[in-house]
Image (cartoon, rainbow, N blue to C red; front, top):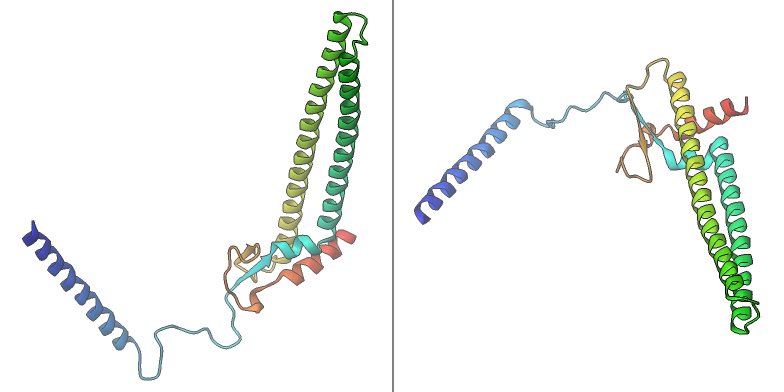
Length: 199
């Protein structure tokens, strides 16, 4: 087993050494003195790509700001409604508990009926909470679709001349780790989309 391992290691070492030699010969044969192997773009010529900072677009696009404000208002209204209903239910349950402990109910059936009413009210409150959360989620999805459609339609007009082959999105440097500022067209897109939205 050790002999086989030694032979394999020797073969791998020879193969790696051969690769180093090939790379060195290829590089030295393809460049003249003072040149690098990379082909730089001619001065002033850019690659036909650009990127858009989506976070910045969402923060500065008027439609996105208004949509976000509308959604936050809806969330706050839903939270207020739920808190009011929860407070009312809590008071009613505390009142029920006090009456039950003081034997204030005329019969066990009456106490049971009130207990079931409060349970139903609690169940209705939970259903309302789920419905409001679902409504807000659907509203958020709808707004995201509208934003995506708006951006796509704008970019088609913006790039009608075909100056860019690729326009990438970048969220907080998630997709593009480093790029020259000249490739960032965010401000141009924001200004154009805001002007279009005002119309």
